[in-house]
Length: 339
Image 1 (cartoon, rainbow, N blue to C red):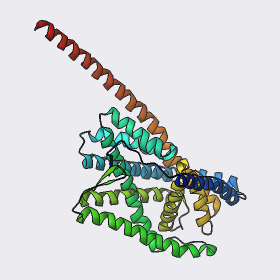
Image 2: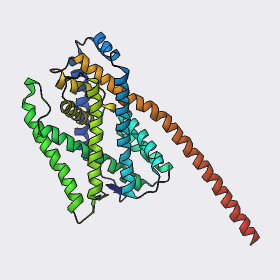
Image 3: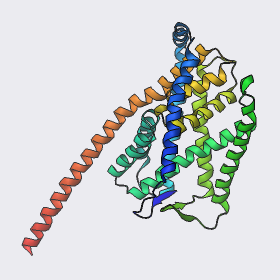
Image 4: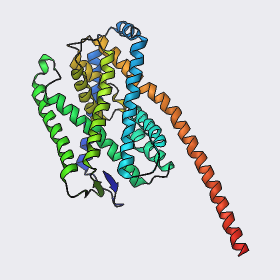
């Protein structure tokens, strides 16, 4: 995990800056063009009819899966509590992590994952270094679970590509082996490394225990599995769950590369491109619209309410602390006069 070790900043080389900007711009152009090409002949009335056909029980199950997923993700910050040793109770940590995750999904990692987390934790009295370590552990937990699942699904070739895409199957399998290797290296380092801390680019990296790393892997994998389970629930019954999981994992990397908030358009483009040879495009779109409504928008609405309550409580604490400080100051003045 990383904590600030100095005030010096790492200067990015100009070619790296422009390369990143160029890649981002390329995908910003590519995704809308690809999505338009894939959706140009969609029968939208059929999509609407499919959405209306979802039973209340199916929607309720979807909400239950979403609630379970958000609870698992919020538990990442409980691992951060165990890792850093801070004393905030779980009743403060879980709502905070829930709000950050909902905003992260919808508005991007910088808003929900970073800025909001620093703000809310600092209001509870945690320092920048502690919050950084919590954030770092949460990120590693998420992507460690991703590497385990994606490595397994990709290496076993559980994502059936369209016929004209078969050349990508071997490449995806090699990526799967690489992801499993990376996850294994992390776990092995947590178990066998005698040196527990390193400095890298002015940050200190401290390895957790193997037990904590295994819990990270489990929680991360469960969360990604639940996300895929929601999409699977909304698709026709004859689809193969590992296939849905694999496509979701591919689309998540594409969304991370493009930096588009909520992966808007990226998720749809990848699912349609890789699944339309098995499932009608109208069914795919209906499932993804339902997925976004249940997993993105519904939690965001709840998170806005929770966030306002957290801010209100923070102001009350600041008011109480301010009054206590004034009282203590007056007591000190009276003590001086009496002495």
